[in-house]
Image (tube, rainbow, N blue to C red; front, side, top):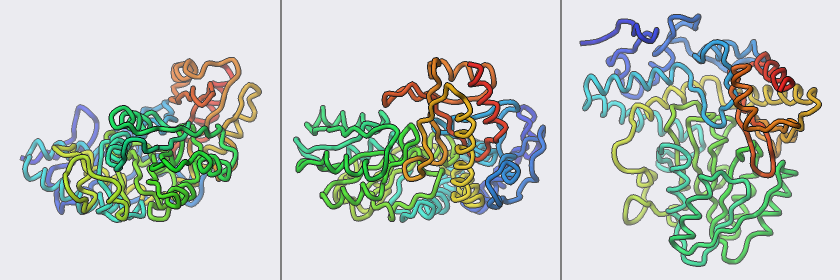
Length: 431
């Protein structure tokens, strides 16, 4: 029996299984914006597609902001930890699970078709890769482990990492050091970054004849932007595998993996990409497959699918990435980059008016990403500040107590506003 009546307990109009599954991948995509419209709020009409806003200001992005269902009065500025998917994505997830409950086998097949026919090709097009170079994962951490354990290394081989890597990027190499006798060396990169030239020079100086892998972030946890293309070219010149952590990059600005020239690339899709929690992607350049084995399948590597973790996966989550893709394709990642840069610049201008604030994210776009901003506030512990700001102003931010900093991190996405940033600045002044 079809159930098209309103979901009374949530205040959302549910999507029928037929509407979700009709046409396989096309059904998922077409359901994305019409799937879930909060009846208790003023939202745009279901089924209306977005377009790239003409400008970077709040007014130009008001229609985009309407697609998100964050509780009124709450400001979310912690996208670098966990993104906030639009209502269309949440609806697609719910519709997928409902479909599995109503007709499991048919839903499983339809969801799988949506992933193969829409999600992987769409991701590949957006990331400048081929579909068979991608494998879907639960997150960037899982992808980083798959890549690290797949690289063919022998006892005594060296892996060069930087001082600003996320723990998820370090742990698999530390495990390989313990298990396989691989040597892990760390090059210190200053925070903030001074220049792309300095970063490349420091990495080049740290390379040795034993170095086989160069592992580094695209964007650091603190929002510093590494010169990925140049570092990958350097690794290639020295015969090393380039292993890139892109958790803080994908969705914030355009990423072209073939242009970057990296051998592997790992990303979360539940941060800036605005996908469901528990989604990620792992990329292996086709020409690098002979150096990166699958840890799940024996024999020769013939395509990206062999890097995919085996067993049952959360199909509704992965199929719902079609809604995230539609959202970003309509709005465009280029416009997202401009909007997040605008908000970060506005935040930096407001912080400059606070005497006790020391900005650590500069205005050099070569080394500073668009969306994340870190700063220190004299006399304030960053960890305590996170709780105080949430309690006093209903604003969610994060701390950055690493790299020698007692810093606060604010990561603004397209749905944040200048008024929210003003509210944050006022709260910080009062701490």
